[in-house]
Each structure stands twice: as C-alpha cells, then as structure tokens.
Amino acid sequence: MSAFAALHSCAEWAARFGSSGRRAIVSVGNFDGLHLGHQKIIRQVIECAQMDQCVSSVITFDPHPLKVLRPGNAPPLVETMNQRMEQLAAMGLEAALVLRFDRALAALSPEEFVRGVLVQELKTAAILVGQNFRFGHRQEGTVETLTELGRRFGFSVQIVEPVVIDGEFISSTGVRNSVAEGRVARAARLLGRPFALTGEIVRGSGRGSTVLFPTLNLAAEQELLPKVGVYATETRVEGRFYRSATNVGFRPTFDGTLLGVESHLFDFSRELTKGRLEVRFWERLRDEQKFSGPAELRSQIAADLHQVRDYFRRRDLAATQPVRS
Image (cartoon, rainbow, N blue to C red):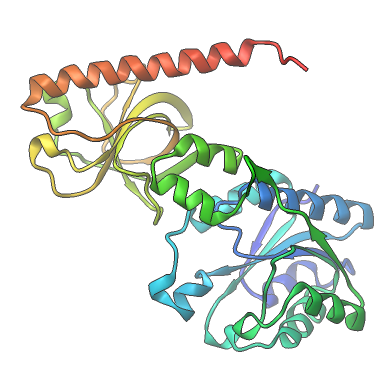
C-alpha cells in the first residue's frame, strides 16, 4: 500500500499522480470529526479503488467554507486538519487533496468544479457521497446534478447510505453538540473513538501542587472544547498513554478567569513544562464547582480520582466479558 499523501493543490496532485495513469476514486466533503458516517464512505472509497487499481482519495477544504461565506455561522471544528489527515492515513486512504477555500473556489458552478477538478485534474473514475451532498456555487449542485455530470464526463456516482445510531443519523453537528454538552461518551460512539484535544504543554499556575495532585496543562489547538467539568480521560505524553482525570474549566476555587484544560495522570510523576499532549475524553463525571478552599478541593479531587479509577476498572472488566449473540 502506498504511503498517504496530503496534497494542497492540483499541481501537487499532478506531480504525485499525473504520470501514473491511475484514475481517482474520490469523496468530497469537510469530513469534520471523521465520524462513523464519514468512515463508511472512506472504507467504500478504498474498496472500490483497490478493485479498480485507482487512487483512493478525498477532496476536503481549508478553511471550512462557512468561515469564508458566513463567518458568523461557522461551527467550531471538532478536529484540527492534522488530526483529520492522521485519521485518513490510519484508515488506509492513499491521498487527500486539501483545497484552499476562498471566494474564487466558492464561485465555481457545479459543472466548473466537476470539469476542472474531478475530471481534468484527478481523472475521476467514481465519486462516493451521501444523499444530501451539495456542491458548487450557492450549493446549487445535488446528487442528481452530479449523476448527470458523471454521465457526461465518464465517471460513476455512488450514493452511500447514512449510519444511524439510536434512530439518529450521525453527523458532524451531532458530534459537536455532544461534545459541547459534555456528552463525551456519546461523542465517542458517533466518532468510533474518543473525542481528543491536542496541543502543547503550558506552564500552569502551580496551584496543583498545593492540593497534592500535580497536573499537566494543555493549550488546546481545537476550536471545540467539552463543556466545563471533570472527565475520565486518557492522556498521551512522550508517546505513551496514561489514564487520567481532566478538568476543563476556570478554577473557580482560586477565582480563575481563564479557561484551562489540566490533567492529573495516574502513575506519572514527572514535571513537564513543554512538549506535545493529547487528551482523550471518555466520560464526564461532574460539573466544575467552587469550593471553600484547598482542603475541600483536595477532598473532592481524591473522590474524582477514585471515580476515574473505578470507571476504567469497569471498562476493563467489560472488555474481558464474552460477547453474547
């Protein structure tokens, strides 16, 4: 299998694949969060490409189109572009063409986009999309438009049925709402993995040591943060995962005013003030509270840590139980 390529222009695509003679099997979208619905489409793209010896690929956009067209309505993104690319690579996709979304791209009619990008540049053999796919200027293009253009330009169109959980179609909006409401366990179900924050370690206020529970503080790169509160998490630092308890909040006991993300890692005692950090959110424990002072806060944190350990103990036990048909 070829190494994954994240390409940022049609010229880069031509340099990578132009001389290969291979056509593309492609899907087009924002793919924010790369949830289970997106993953279903990507898997089918890969399967079709392998059968026809084509390039399995997606076209996505940076920034999100609404940030250009209607900034006030642009949603906070679930993932960074780096996270999105890592997920696509992990699934086994061969290439992602990340097009810069600007007014010029937005002005392309459906036919201009299909002719200029899908046909001339990618030599598309098939495109896989969801039933509600829209594209082109003012989103005038529909799957019916795409199908007609496919007949004219020689590519096929496959409609992929959505994934449904608990009677709800999985969507990026559903993931965003779940995270914003603190329902990270539900977000994990929709994503097929836990919601994760990434970024650099930053120096904290030092108050963690006053309550005997040192923390690593994260400067999150994501636009979307979970609802303020305390969570059962896993934190990756220096290439290793540690189970952890994470507070997303303002430290009201100490009259904090800046939103922070701080994690206490189990079985980790080193003091770090720089480096990369990833925090994966599994379960929300409680709201953030203001306590009378460090002693009461210390007692609550001890209870939180006990609850986190119990959560992972129960999860480990469930994982060892046989699956009943």
